[in-house]
Length: 82
Image (cartoon, rainbow, N blue to C red):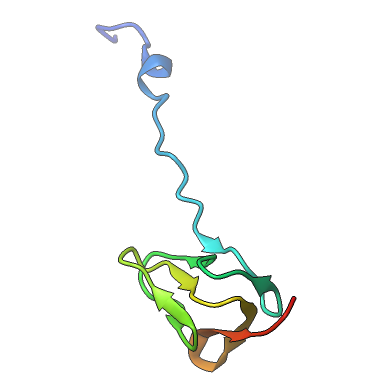
């Protein structure tokens, strides 16, 4: 027989906050400078033209333009009007 009452419900109600990772802009979409394109853990996507990688591997754009997903999971942004 158990020597304590069932207290599982009050002990199990912890969870971590979601990290909201993934693609934030799709191919062909217009983005402004400084916009986040991909939030990722590790470098699944690599930066291409006009895209930089932050210290947490987030990819962001440095110019206004259109997002392009290229071969080998490379992400670029080509300048242009909206």
